[in-house]
Image 1 (tube, one colour):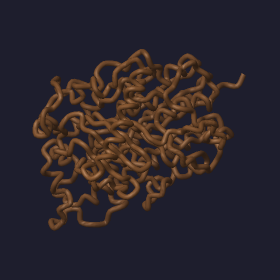
Image 2 (spheres, rainbow, N blue to C red):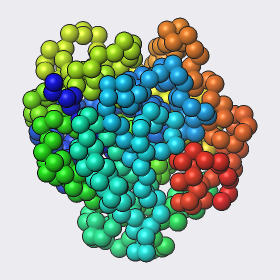
Image 3 (spheres, one colour):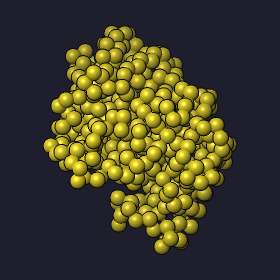
Length: 467
C-alpha cells in the first residue's frame, strides 16, 4: 500500500504578499519561491482575517475562524480549547510523524510529536541574526530523519526573518539600499523615535543614528531574499532525498507586516491591508496544476481542509474553512464564495471590523495607543493605501457595514454556541487589568523595551513591563 504524501508547511511569520516578486513586487525578493510557484498554484487574494500570530496560526492549523478557535489575542490565555482539533492531531491519528520547528509553547502549535527551536531574535557577534540559517541547522537534519522513516511526515516550519528585528546578514542588508541611512536631513524616522511604546525596541536593532525609513524597509526586503535562499536549501534537500514527487509543499504566512505606514511602525497591528493580505502557494506534483493562479478570495482557514483533501484523508470535522481543491481544478461548485468578511486584531490594540471588496470598516473596542479615531472607514477601490478616513463623510456606509458585522457576529455566536471571543479577551494586553479607558492610558501602559522583551512576549512567558 502506497504511503500518504508528506507535507512541508512553511508558515512564514510577518510575510507581506506585496513584497514578494512572485506577487509582482518590483524587487526580485523571492526568486526561489517564484520558481516553486511556477510548479504549483498561487492564490492571488489570500487573507488572514484575525491577526496577529496566535490567532493566525490557530486558524491555519485548524481550519476554523476565530469563533471556531476562540483565539483572537497574541497573548492568548490558557490552551486552545479541546473543541477544536489541529492538523497535527488529525495526522497523528493517520500514523504521520509530526514535527514543529520554531513555534514551541504557543497554544496554536498544539499536537506535534516533536518541537525544535532555533535562535530567531538575538544578533550574533556581527550584529546580524542569520535566522534562516539557524532554522536550517535544525530543520534539514530533521527533514532527513523524517524522510528515512516508513511513515509519512508533516513538517511545520515557522520562519521569522520578515519579523522584526530585521537583521539579515551580509550582503543582504544592503542588497536593496545604496544610500546614506544616517543623513541628518532625512526625518522619516523622527515620529517613530518619539513614540515611547516602541522607540527603545526599535533603537535596539536599527543602527544608531539611522534616519532613513527606506533603509529599514530595505532590511525587510533583504531579509526576505536571504530567507528565500535558505528555503532553497530545504527544497534542494527534498530533491536530494528523492521525495519531491511524494511531498506537498505550502508557502504561506500568519499575517503581513507594517513598515513605515499608519504610525504602526515595523510591526503587525492595525487592520490595514498589508497585515490582512498574505501569500498562499501550493505545490504537489500530479495533484496541483502547475503554473496556475486563483484570483477569487481565499482564507487562512481554508488551508487545513485543502491539505487534507489533497492527501486524501477524510474527517468528520465541520470546518469553517473550505477545501480549495475544486477551485484549483476550475470545478468550484460553490456559488456563494464569500467576498465580505469579519476582521479582528488583539496585538497592541483591540479592534474588529468588516471588509468588502470596496469598503473597510474598523471599530475600536477600547481606546488605542495610537490615538486613532474610534471608527475608521476606507474606500479600498479609490484609496488602496487607506489614507483617507471617510467615516464622518459616509455615515450610511458605516451604518450598513456595522449591521453586516453585527449580524455576522450574532450568526457565528449562535452557530458556535459561544460568545464572540473579541468581547471576552479583556486581558489581551497581558497587564492583568481591564480595558483601557483612554488612549493616553494605553500609550503609557504598552511598552517593548528590547529584543529580549519582544521574544519573551512571543514565547508566552511571564510578561514584564519596562524591561
